[in-house]
Length: 42
Image (cartoon, rainbow, N blue to C red; front, side, top):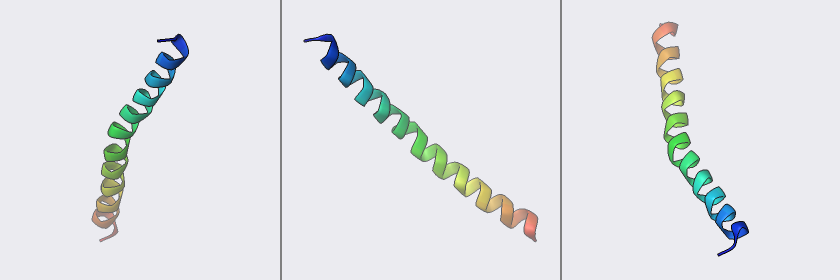
């Protein structure tokens, strides 16, 4: 195994991990903003 292959695998794993955490976080923040705007608008 060369260093280039290992780096590519590491990059793919890092991207997957960010998506795994980032997508639910983004969805949660979106829901928070929606509910907060309803709360403060009346």
